[in-house]
Length: 322
Image (cartoon, rainbow, N blue to C red; front, side, top):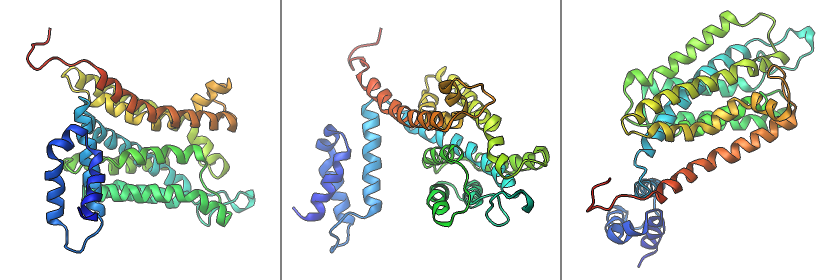
């Protein structure tokens, strides 16, 4: 056995044991036939292909074939949420405080956040032009810039958006990486339209004295919780409508979006933990503790739901269900 074959077999462990026994030799043989004679390691594309295939088979073995469509639905809703928020943030970034106020700024912008929000607007443009792979790359780039704001601000001494604004975008971006390759063109254009509409609304409706230190505070109450409520209502209605037809992708989409929704609603959730009125910003301790709980509990619910789905008794193939 060659090193390349051994490494393909290790990657094949992503598949369920029964599937490996039935088709493992055939799968590895196909990859070996297509590999260059001097190759010693599987290519990154082959590795990702095997891991994705293994995940799909494990999902099917768990009786949750509607999980993948649920992930794709969640990705659409995540990008549709992140894009208009980025449009609003971009408008606000263009309104730094006047020099006499002594507020820090990043040149002509309120903070370094303009870099991340511009990347998110690009991620809203790309789906309308090139679906699937290019959309995922644009979202990954926006994610990279969003995460990089924290060390960049520390290194440069320039202001950045607070974490309660950055964290929801990071969570939404991780979900949006599941974007499908086969979305119809009108649906792919919706994030761009939503971003433009939010930016226009911010330009028209935002009071002229909202800038600098009051910038992100204004967004917390009520914009972020309102966004969470809208997304929750949309995915709830979609899930209920699909469930009536025996399609549970809405449930899986909701589970995928729980963490972003919790981070969008961080202020009221932390206020409940801190015992503060809804119109008051909670303490940083309450915000940090709530964010930790949301990021801990939210991702754990999806594998728990899969495990419960696996344990659910299934009818015998030779018997009709009662």
